[in-house]
Structure formats: structure tokens, C-alpha cells
Length: 214
Image (cartoon, rainbow, N blue to C red; front, side, top):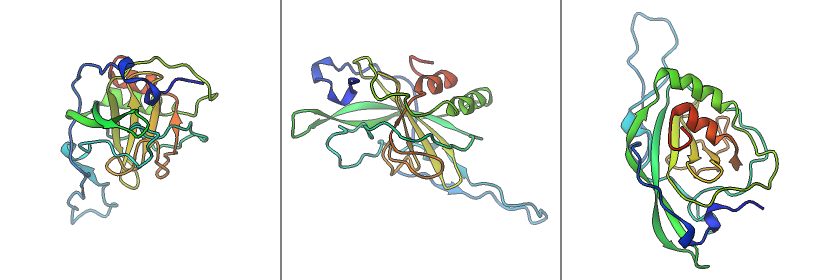
């Protein structure tokens, strides 16, 4: 069985030094561009302000087993994510949020810095990396026992914002959210996302030049 970061004893956890990252507010506000009265083309897609794409904290559910990380079960199906036409990266750092009833450490993931928009060359590499995000080939795997930041990569989908949460530690696990402000990582089931833990985080971070993998 693979060690899970949420099961590590507190003494074995080392919070990585803060890196530059992202910013945000409680929920994204889409704005519709002004229509050209002389145009007969379809209305443009909603746009999002950089300060509105990243929530102050990653959302979480009430499951005491996740310790604030999100889904723990491996995904059982491959996502069908739309290709990004614009994206932002946001860094989140772990903050000790107390103890669980069984004596484990509870974490909150707090926004660090401000949102950084992905440049055009990296956007294509990110799109290619998303195609390689998939379920793990088998349930058993070994992950290094450390803790660091997490990265939220946000981009517009057909129903709002899609979030790709990647651990910058351990097995570089990926968790998807169909609403970064309200849906916990790994609980997404809309706009091409699937619930569970996915492989491919190293490729995502490398494509975007983020963290230790980038």
C-alpha cells in the first residue's frame, strides 16, 4: 500500500518554504464582454479577472479521513477535460488547523501570493499535459514522505472555472474540481472532471515550470 501524506506522523512532515504563487477571492465573478451592436456573431465567452480565480483557501468537505487534502480514493475513470484557452496558477501552503479526534494533524490550504496568468507557450504545454492526466495504473504505489505546497491551475470551462490541484510533494497526485471556490479537490464530477486521485501531476508542473518538478 502506498504511504499517504495524510497518514504521516507530524514529526515526519516538513512544510516546504513558501514559493511565489497566486491570489484570489471567495468566488470567481465572470463578466460578459460588451456586445458589438454591429456584429452578428455569437457572444464571446465570459472572462475572469485574475484576482477572482483563486479562493483564499482550498475548499474541503467534512470527511475526517482526508485531513484537508481532499479525495483519498484513486479515480476509476479518465477525465475528459476541455482544452484551456487561458489559465492561471495559484500556490497554496499548508497551515496546521489542529488535530483530528484520532490524533492526526488537520491541514488548511491557504493561498500564497497572487494569481499568475499562464503565458502562451506554457499554455500549449499545459494542454498536452492535461491529456496525460489519468487514473493510476494500479492502486499500490510508493510516495516520498514530505509535505510542500500545492498548486491550483484554474481555467475557464463551459460551466465556469475548472481547477487542477497538484501536490508539489509525494507522488505529485492530481485532484480535479469543477468549482475551485466550493468543490473540494478530487470531488469534481462536472465539465469533464472526475472524482478521485489521478496520476500526471509531474507533467503538469513541468509544463508550467512550477515547483520542484518544474
